[in-house]
Length: 174
Image (tube, rainbow, N blue to C red):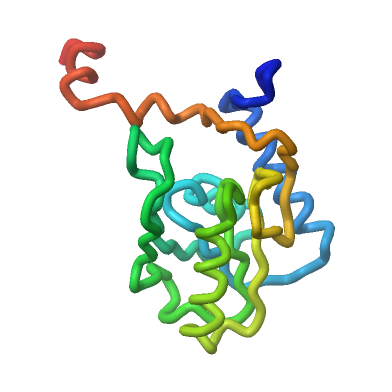
């Protein structure tokens, strides 16, 4: 649900999973065949996992991080992992890069460039995101929702950003 002022988008678990399914449909309807899904951790892990299951393709993971300040609400320095975790040797062939959103576009631009420069075994590279904000410099090959007001997206699992083990003990009285 988008707030009246357009500054916040609140997404339920049901909506979140429906959007991932719609992303799968967009990729499927394009007719593009790919060999591997490469998700960007953390935001792309859930969509990547679900797409991996739907398309029956191996899931590779690359860690990136830029939203660390103020409980992950402020973008800072972009860190990209040196290595990609993949179940099949080195990543190669046709790769679908998956993340949750194209916010500023900085991360996706940098990762696409790095993949093209450092992984010559990748023969074709396309990208898929759930959301694309108007402010993004990156335009994914596949995207479900365009967000013209650039809202902060409140994803359903964000409660875990503040939850600590001691609180779980209290909650479950273990």
